[in-house]
Image (cartoon, rainbow, N blue to C red; front, side, top):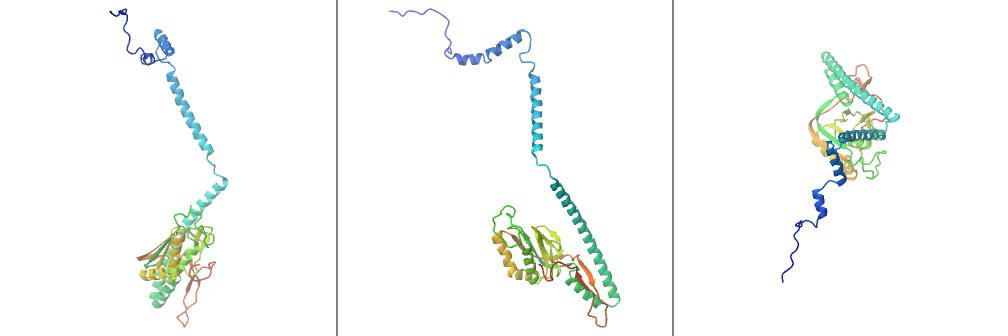
Length: 315
């Protein structure tokens, strides 16, 4: 028996069962959009909307306005300087200017003092007073009235790296100084240790220490004879470098600095040098003089202006 033949008709597409995918591939545009495009094409109009460029310009303008509004808002939220902050800034600027002027005047005074001493020494030499000139020179060295150059050591003290952030490093009997910061008492102990080790002249950050020099503090600032110092604190001592180093490291001052480093992180470094210079003390003034009599011993004496501290070493 033969099978019945199917009537002839159009061949079935292989993808007839995938009508959704077929429609998406053949007609990707939505029917509504496609109808609108066909109408515009029938009227000889471009397929795209003529307002597209306008919309682009509007978008750019809105973006610029939005950025401007954000900038204005950020500026408005920024804290405005108060009257106290403005006054503080003016005072700081004025203090810095006066300090610069004072330093320039001190340098000029030191240069003029050197010229005066040279003229005095020349006059004494011509009049046969060479021995007296040598004695005056010795007294000027002892009174810190002249600069000295020679071998010595430099002791550098600096705050701990965590001084600004570590508030729980311990308590210190240092007159209210924050733990980890170098205090005035630390510098006093270090300087007195160098004097005891045999230093002939000492200066801190370029400030010569005389017999009546005072190392004190004002708040968290260290001052020497009312002159503020900034970290790091460099103590320069003239003398035999090897002797100063061995004596200082084996003294109480050396052990004290070691303990500061171990307990609070305060940094200290002692280094020797073949040539160091300590300047003269610009505060030295001639306050008393006696004429020479039969006894050639009395000479003009030089001393420092009265300081709010007792004499001897650093305090």
